[in-house]
Amino acid sequence: MNLDALYSELTLKTNAKVALIVLDGLGDIATAEQNYLTPLEAAATPNLDALAKNSAQGRLIPAAPGITPGSGPGHLGLFGYDPLEFQVGRGVIEALGLGVELQPGDVCARANFATLDANGIVTDRRAGRIPTETCEKLCALLAAKIKKIGDTQVMIRAGKEHRFVVVFRGKGLEGPLTDADPNREGFAVPVVKPRDPESLKQKKMAELIAAFYQTALPILAQEKPANGFLMRGIAHQPEIPLFEDRYKLKPACLAVYPMYKGLAQLVGMKKIEGPQTIAEQFERYLAEHANYDFFFIHYKYTDKAGEDGDFTAKKKAIEDFDAALPILLQKTPDVIAITGDHSTPVSLKGHSWHPQPVLLHSKVSGSDKLERFTETGANSGSLGVMESKFLMRLMQANARMFDKFGA
Image (cartoon, rainbow, N blue to C red; front, side):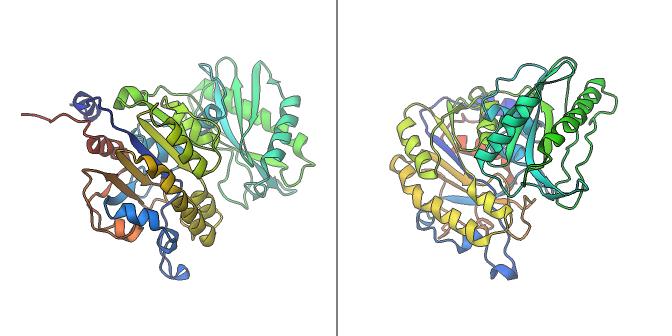
């Protein structure tokens, strides 16, 4: 029997309240330069420590051993969808998060404003993390001048800081394509290509991306520092089972950044708009507690500091999260999982393949008798090292949502 089918057959509807709290890029590695401490280990976290004493811990492999995941695969795994089976382009996720109503056949690209030198070499992939207001101005400039390419409609929407999304709507389009992003400074923007060289729809889409660059780059040429852009996750929306059908839990999403709202919307979670800080997100959880069974709460700033290579900032982001945690615990969920979608080590300044730590708390989780929630402690926890796609199933088990298997 298919494992997901077995889980579905055993799933019971209960009144449990379940919360998945994701500190983006939480995991890290200890190095000599960091006095052999990770930011999580160096941070003062009295509230997490108190929770850890009555919890189980372990490590999660986000995709597969040695594979560094993007945020999409990282979160889909946490939502219980095998990221190797359900592959979703980042552009689709970003578009949904920004509120774009996608139609069948739409192809979406997630984009970053960037800085290019006179030879077209990328010198800053994020254009100095320009403020959102600058991004909105530049997107309005592009949108005013690029409404169509041939018979294809072009829609441009601003996101947070340097991020934006481009949606192509027309006939005979399809993804996925390779990225127009070298993924590091010091290289030119690559030309996109079809993932399937035999696909005429992907070939047409690649030609449209090239035409978009030819039109858009001259418009941005005099802008500083955002005189160029990169494009990733160029794809169309796939079919994916809905979260509520899969788990018998009515889900809600409390996230700030569009990408994570888009990921939640992709699986049918209700986006709750408004909160901008983790304290506000937890306050809104209290207000919405009776309305939903499952809460996905996303916290971005651990990942942001990791990508900047800023140990102190990542440590502070963890401490800020910990300071807000008592708000959530005013109505403690029946099951709480606290983890990351992947690791973002400060020393690497980017995502990595290292398993991220996870804490699982419920009345029946048991205690691993660990005084803190850290990578080192998680290594000895009872959850062991497992693929992240099984976390949701463990959360269901801790919510007593499974019937017995077999006689």
